[in-house]
Length: 269
Image (cartoon, rainbow, N blue to C red; front, side):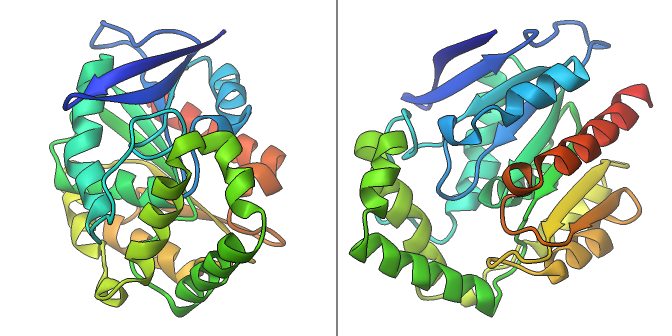
């Protein structure tokens, strides 16, 4: 069953979608899968993948659009280069509390994966049982900047804005500018999240599956190796050949199988 709703955080509304069972009030109950979208994503752009993962694991799912995306309230522009820090350190903890989610497995894609790492390493993160990180970033790479510059040109010269507006509506400029401008702005070349990784280790083992496409134009295997080194043996990487930036769309069967196996190991421990 798919139910669309909205949750208020700091006086503003976030679009969200609940899938399957509601969060358990039992401290020994199952966790909820929390989906954090990519830099140009939203609830609708996950399509049916969250529902498939929730159904395959028997867990409830919670999908939301960040401020400035999809049907959520807009964000203020220009966004600072710390916008992902703000999401991980402030918005996500408040959202989980407002949603009544006391135990979670985070499923983050691209920016959503980076926000997951900030949350896991920079807050108390109560009830965090594990993470799945698709195409995460912990530092800037030259190929990332080049890909974003190329997409900015596409946004300016093609119908990309109109196609994005089908999903983001009046938030289309918040979504594109709020993502692209910080990444291409002054100072972002030194942006780095590796400082958060030791804080994840300090919580004890946080089982983490990293999924990276070999042909990802926004990042390389170096991102995964940094996360593995920082988190330690609790982190492992699935490296997919002939796959780009969105494994759950480009290699859905293999990605789903790997995610289900990772989640089952977490909940059976």
